Image (cartoon, rainbow, N blue to C red):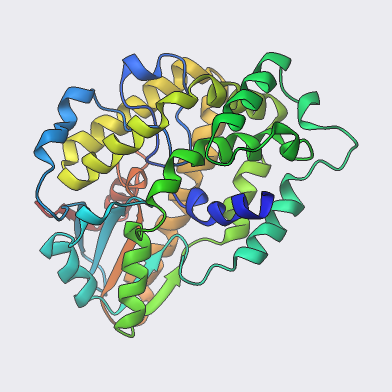
Length: 334
């Protein structure tokens, strides 16, 4: 069963840094989480799900100028439904025009066996303790009940040798399983790039992605686990709203989502939020911006498309802002 869950890690870790709480009503007690199931940070009424009827999706695309090499930024999500294809013509054209495609990870090349090995190296408890020793008893009992009723039908004992972050992340991944037969947006872009013979660049590694969780303090892991089991019932609704948001491609909605991410995170996580936000977004944005700058200023000649999770794009420390501070002109493609 653990091996089956590990197959989800490829999808889970990549994304959904968009996956944060959708409204103050839904997130009064939940943190902005890194995995697939929480929802975006907008009021449910603004997502206008009944508008999302026609096939296709707009997504988020920016054009970058001012460097030696022309380029694009694409904000992705890491799951999708069939009706979201084809993508917006501007985004498809950006993929076609690019000589180099830079992704967080190339999901077409991830080795699931290696992923499981890395997870076991980082998530396994090796000090003789079990999961129950690291989380409140009430939370553990809720976790056990939820898993038993889930699609996995698993018992909590299957996770007794794993740290709280892995158990919580697995729980959050469950509502996303129904979408696994459809390529996520970033995986679609990767497959198209390979098909067209483009050079695919990885901005991060599976080890660094998993290492984010392993760097959690005991206090942060406990909070992550607690709020995950407390809000486990919101996942399916959250995913639908996330998909609707990306389909509409409304930039103001994305910016509102990021603002709510910070507001609700500070409210629900207190002093731990800065550490959490630093690990999941800020530090990664800084490192990615440095690499992007290198490609645009001194990289091999050609057009670059950088496609990473949409939440990386916005905010004062988002990629758009960081690249503008380096002197680039970054324009949203309406």
